[in-house]
Length: 588
Image (cartoon, rainbow, N blue to C red; front, side, top):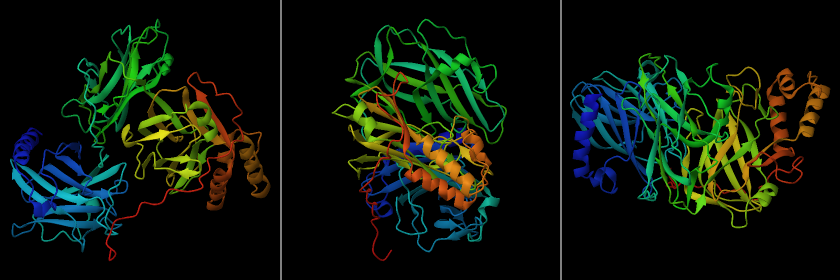
């Protein structure tokens, strides 16, 4: 690892002073230190750096790999991290000592094939102190139907590696070689961020030498206490503080405020979040102050708004929750990572707020088993936003999409007067293992009377029975936590199927499909009693598409806004958003 870091520093100092040849990068702007970075493997041998050029729809990628001079390395993409049906750039050395950098793909058996169209454009290559450094460019869309299209949202970046030299790379079976993948947002937001106030101070909440268990997944919780702030302040930025060397271990983190009376005390806690010894009153630590996931940069709020902390009624206690990802089951990890705030006494114009969109946490919304794709829709209806949002509207500037384990795609659509506006946020390669707050490249103005539809697609192909909505990790959720200003009293705007419509469906299943359903049973028991097949799954999907809604149009105190919120209509989309065309030559 020390050699790799040294090589990175030496090469970057050279790289900054030079420019990539125009013929190699097709007149991309002058080269610079790679702007973004993630580790690719858990052994610290592979580091990926990249920069995004939106003017040319191109990514410049740079990989630093600890390898012998003749070893081969493949880096590329697939939909969800599979080594099969992948699109890869491969560096390899033949038996005559000649180096090659080739565009390749894998079939359903993970066998490597050379692409007839070469779209991996190598710009620089060097070998320094046992570290191979490769710099290449890749268009977002190569206009080749077999190539991966780099899109907004999550990108699964693959790697595979092995010993060389090789007679050829055609026919290598990659699932038999060392391989893996990393998730990140490749098309990062590069908009300028506001400067920190001159009086900004920092608050840091770190774990204290946690001995991470030798299990694949650990959620570790530790209680912390803020300093007493007698007056209100605004958080204006937060970022991760990762212990050096643990970049591949720390998967994501959240910092929760404990919403308890200011006079209430809390005992220290530093253990697994799921431990039986965790006191029940720690469930009050649920209001998200910050959320970070691997690869995310510091989150700096817009100059108009800040997250309020401090004041006479503000509890000082916060809970740090860290998800450790330890697939090699190592038992010698020790970690002191955490989250850091920057806050100011110079209050911004607005307090920012966080609102929940999507589906109510209820078993009424369910996903049948053995489905490759099954989509549920949560509605924030115009009748709710009309009551809750002021005439000037709210500005949504960030979004965090959330499901449990079977979610594979999440979007939130914005509807005004039946016309679909620009997508608020979406991720076609969503992973429940990579959830981060993302600053929107273009903020969204939501006005009273607008509708918002949050859609979640799930894959239950590995589950033998139905998955219901709920709080358990094996249940499902469909949520978009939107960050906006100015803060209003609308805390959540979520829906579920109306109970009367669901009861009619259960009666139909009993009467016409001979299923043992009954309105005398609870919802979960009814769903589990159905012998699911493709026809019955489609019938449930069709029901969800036309049902009336039970709405949760809730204020911050948990009470509903005045009105009748059952049997409400779904958000109507009369003019869907046109599909964005690909800019490709006709002969492609």
